[in-house]
Length: 167
Image (cartoon, rainbow, N blue to C red; front, side):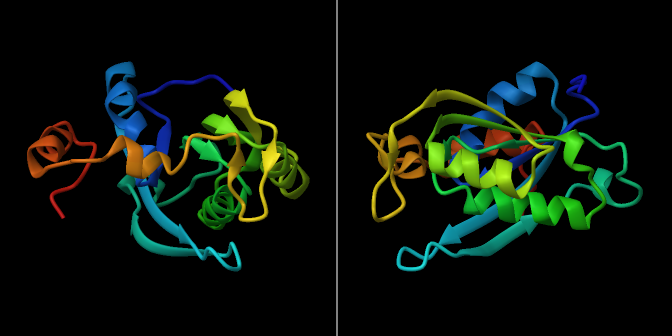
């Protein structure tokens, strides 16, 4: 899996995945797939609320490479749902990578069992998940912590850099 940022799509799991956007743009990523998901805190099931598929994913994707950027890999349910969407678009499993800041062993195992061809890179592997599906010891809600106080002025540069559309 050679990484050519200008040809590789970065799937940003909203909202927390947006934390990777600026650095990814600086590394040469030009194509972003935005996918917003929320999990039901009772069932841990995933529900998508936003999707912006880049034009590069319209057509033959058999050789397309995608990196899924999600800071917290807990249960793995969100990433499994994202991989399933990518498969439906024709992206091959061996062309998908997952990048996460922190992970739980249960979530990594869940993804590897569902999709053995997908490789995962995590900065830190924590102890376990608790009964609510949160990483222990973890960081808390990454999106809430990272984007506390976010304003329109913070978002405008992302739009001018092509990371976000004007929608």
